[in-house]
Length: 116
Length: 118
Image 1 (cartoon, rainbow over the protein chains, first blue to last red):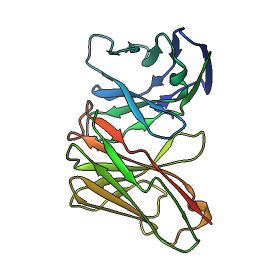
Image 2 (cartoon, rainbow over the protein chains, first blue to last red):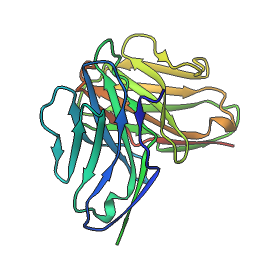
Image 3 (cartoon, chains in turn blue, orange):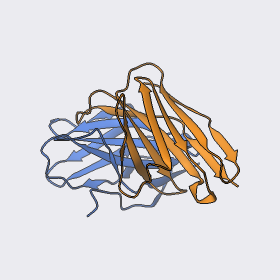
């Protein structure tokens, strides 16, 4: 079974609007971390935001926020005021805490295109 | 965020030759590094976990004799693709783990190496 699921292969958003990229996860580990990375066409993976399973508040980093709904096992990324430079592939990833090796499990990715 | 470099950024080689890719953590020490392979428009596929001073741990289906990993210091891991063939052509990305591997520790990625085998 998929541990990280991103159901949107591609998304479009108008410049300056907000967009939500979906991510659901599956784990029985009580301690885990959720990450979002951005991969522009250059290929580099850029770390955006982190949410811990015990965090009470949703993580925010500038224009990025994570809508963490623990009961639903979802960790959606919200990008506010989209910019043309936000066009990229976005990956959701999870690290399980117990007995871990530091490995990240990645979702399939969502390609975001920002329209001018 | 922390910086990870990768060299070379691209390489073209003839079939049968070996190619070495370096991954360096520039501003932190990384006991653990990871090597991924990515095909166009697809997700990252973990190939192996590289641990400083010990043997790498390979994922199922990855040939350890084909993809040699050496993590000789806390800032350097290398991936050598031995006797490369056209099917080895891909985008290879390394990452370095900042921390001991707890749930909150972040992996920082290198810029990737595009390998083309003719």
